[in-house]
Every structure is written in structure tokens, then in C-alpha cells.
Length: 447
Image 1 (tube, helix red, strand yellow):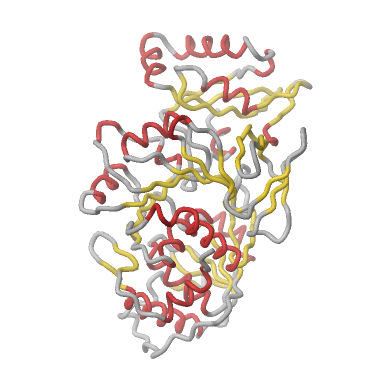
Image 2: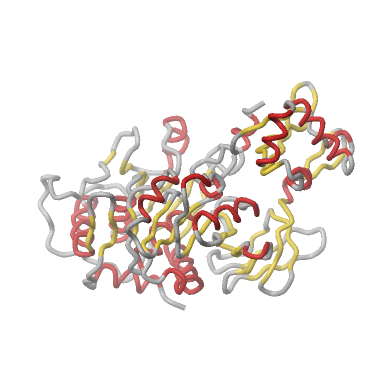
């Protein structure tokens, strides 16, 4: 397996004639990158702090600061949320901040630039070992800060695995991304993978399909790092592009969205299943309606009936119990059956939220469905629905009350009355955040 730690050394000690990154008006050569990292590490070395919050949207500026912090053996805190209240909660976990945050002890994102007024050092001293810890702050489904720590060597191990599995599919690709590098999926796929394996990456995030179409016009080979939030919003009227590769992670991509994405982008997205805690577990491609996942190399799962699956992975020092129920098909393939923590009790009855959502989305009138538990004097369910094209036509013919009744009757064929949602909301699209996640707080706020 390719060693990403060695690739890290080569990135900083050898001269390569290629552009590390670009944006709509600039290209950043490898020699410029080394110059910026050298200046950046010199600036930070003058400061007394050990741990830094790094919040920089531009991925080139982020890369310069991130690599400089690793060279100096500093610890790095990452969060996708820079709202003041959130930062107040996580502030005890770092000494200083770099980037676009409203805090004291902040270095600007481009403090390493040539017009900073600081003297430029002559050499870059690259360590032979890396000892930094990267702390990710996520919100999960609760919207409250949760810290997950990983050594940089664990993260680089995962980059090596990604290259060994997918490297041949991204030959000569430039990387574009619709996700930020402030969480583990974006950090690995948007930033570290192209950086260590000499793929030029686009420094700004792609927010709209129109941007993607424009950026693809003059580029031959594109790898898109994306999420269900972006891929499920494809506008069929905007024309198509031809990608060489596309990745999606954060949540599962339903089959209809995967088919539409393939039509618009020229490839079926490769979905990556995992979490910040576990790292990547498996991957799939929904071509030919495939719903089987393949485990990444050196990952094993043990499963007994009615028990949580046990994951063993090189990215962790211990085994971990999975929250997802699954069916093992072989030593290296599995099917996902839903989350074990989505079994709830309503009026003493066990109800699977995943099963209800699956039943709803089996209707030709429903594109996506999420079900949440609500409490107002009593406990009951609420449903958030994204209608299919046929569903929208039906809504135009009748009204929401008619649709509510139709879907309740469908559920009544399988479930007891307590499992049938009492409140219904109809949306154009589900409220995914920038990480491609749906938080419980966002969903319950709809009722």
C-alpha cells in the first residue's frame, strides 16, 4: 500500500512542476506552495500556542496553514460551524485560532502572503515523524458539539487506502468540491488526497450546478467531491457535464437521485459509507440498482443476530460497535438495513423510523422522506416529505390534506396507528447542512 507519510515528506522536500491549486483567477504552483508553507510555519513558530482552531474556507489557504501546523507538530481543531455560540462551547479546546472566526488570538487566513511585511525564511525544516492530533467537532444528530480526536498518522493511513482503491479512477483529474474541508470527508477527499498525490484542486467551494457546468467547460478530467445535498438537487434544464469520477458521502444517496446525478454528470457517484469516528468503512456504486457495499481493505465486521456489528479498522486502536444494522453477505460485502438507534417507543410500541421512511419512499409519489419523534402533551411522529414529479402533479390536482390521507392509508396496511405520522410537512428538498447531514434540530423545527 502506498505510504502517505512518505508522500508528505516528498511534498515538502522535492520540487514538482505542477499546480497544487487554482481558482477562477490564479494558479498556485508547487514552488509557490512551498514558499507559502515556509513563511506560514515561520509565522506560527513565533507564537507560544500548541493547539489551533483552523477555519479557512479557501482550500489553498487552508492547506498552507494545515501543513505548516503539522510541520510544527501543533494540534489542530476543525469544525464546520463558526457561529459565535458554537465557538463559545468549543473554545476551551484550543489556544488560538487561524482564519474566519470572531475570536481573540486570530491570525488571518493569508498571514503567510508576500505582502504580510514579515521577513521570509530561507529553508523549510521538515520533521521525520508527525505527532499532531486533529480534533473534529461535529454535531451528529443532536446539534451539540462532540469532539473526536485522531492522530494525523491515522488520517494519512486512510488517505493511503483511498489512493489504493480509487487512484486509478482519478488519473490526471482536477478536483472540484461541493463540501468543505472542515470535516473528515472533505479533509481527506477534497484536500489531502489531491495534495499528496499531485492532483490540482480548485480552491473555492462549488455551491451551484451552474458553477460546476462553467468550471467543467474547459477541463478534460474532473473528479467531483460532493454530497447527497448537492447531488439530489440536479436541475435537468441546465444541461449535462461529463465527469471522470464523482464521490458522495455524509448520508445515503437514494437511487432516484443517483440515477439523475448519473444522467447530469456522466457517472454514477461512488458513495463512501463511514463516520468521523470510524473513518471510511465501505463504498458502493448504484449502477444497475446495486445496493451492496464493499469494505475498504483491512477492515473487518463481525455480526451476530440481534447484536450490534463490531468494526475493526486500521484507523482506530480498538474495535467499535456500529449504530447501523447490516447484513454481511461475505467477508468483504454487506447491505445496510438502517440505524439501530432509530428504533423508538411510542405508547409502549417499538417503531422503526427507518422502516416507515422506507415504506413511504416506496410510493411513486415520494422522492425522499424523514420521520421524527415529536412531543406535545403526548409522543407522536411527524413526516417530512419531498414529492416526486408524479407527487407534485398529484398535489396540484388535489391538496396536502388529500396527500396526507393517501400516505396514511399506505402506512396503515403495514403499521399500527401509533406508527402513522400525525403531522406532515412538504418541502422542495430536505434541509441538509454543508456536511450533507440532516440534524434532528433542523427537522423538528419544521413542526
